[in-house]
Length: 113
Image (cartoon, rainbow, N blue to C red; front, side):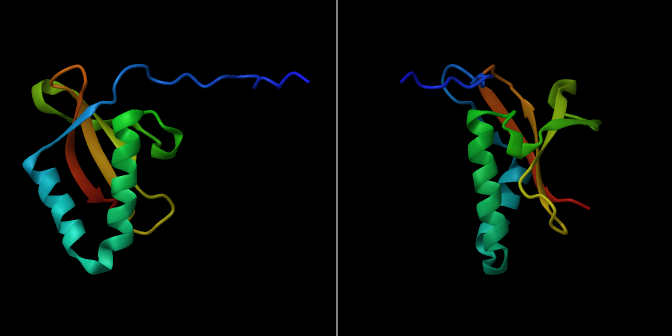
């Protein structure tokens, strides 16, 4: 019996994953999350989102979208990805592509206001 093929095949990014670079601010925020025992669940959510971001920045769980009120280095577009959903003070990851084609620069990791 032939296997059923899905109606729509998901397109996956080909090639190696992106390399994540962290600004000093983002690295400090990640270290702060890691060092507080009360933020363990949020730290794990951020790590999971960073792993998705590294492989596929358009992964559906990230809800990635342009953050138009800020510009990145060299006037680059800034994007926002969700580390948590439907949680008071949910964490967000702000990033831009570059400086190299296979890099993503993490600008900030912060709670949603």
